[in-house]
Length: 338
Ligand code: DAH
Image 1: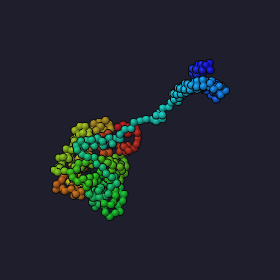
Image 2: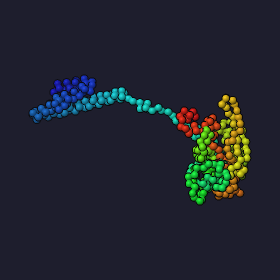
Image 3: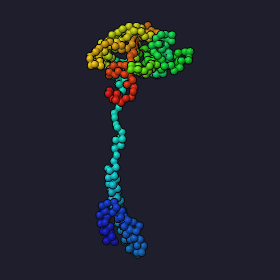
Image 4: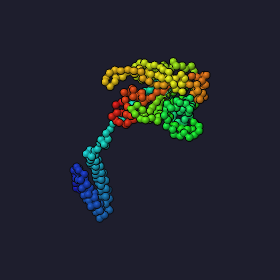
């Protein structure tokens, strides 16, 4: 038995690959292995010998089994490691990974929001499907008014006799003037960037869907001077230089007086020459008393200004984009330039 124990240890020590280890297991510890037959032979021994040899055999068996187990798991994990090394696949190679970037309109919207919030404005929004009343009537544009023709409208439902139940796709974000004042009253200081819809034939400069920014400030003692200062500050910060602006009389039913604001726009033309000209930039004015009344704000106590401009158009100016259709074309080559 001493001889067996020595031999078993030696053979086990020499097992340097998994196959040898498995052979050892079979030869020494397996059903027909040496140790198993020793254990079987115990039966024929005297009680005294059994007592002597039995525990010894058991302890050899335990020890060998443990060493075998440790070696086996070591070999197995080594083999697994090797296999992982050779079978390794870079799953990310299946994708042409690219970072996205921010759409030029969203980029500009964020900048405008930053500028206005730093001046104490809040960013407001509301539904794009709007009642006729919020979109038109409450803004002092009754159905008989020729100003309705200025905005070709997508009607969703126009059968109701009452404009609070007829529904349109909002033609401007001025609707939020009404929603905001009806909910919160005055004073109010908001900008409303958002998507609007017009029933337009699409070409280089027109789209049926585009973005606007509306502004509204109502408080005590507000005058045109506040409007001028606010717009100048915004433009200067947006274009990162002093921008020359001019006011002309303009007509919008929801403001009185109404203004058109032009900016002195400098650009490089197609032949590479530096050019400049006045460019219509936005509509603005002092909020019409009828609008305040429609929103339960007392025009004898409060006054305010409002303005509205095309965010999509501004993005085209700011980034020199000459075809509006490119903006929503989902063309990667175009969009990754910003
Ligand atoms: N809502 C007008 C439009 O879509 C733009 C506008 C003009 C907004 C004058 C105003 C304003 O607040 O005072 O054409």
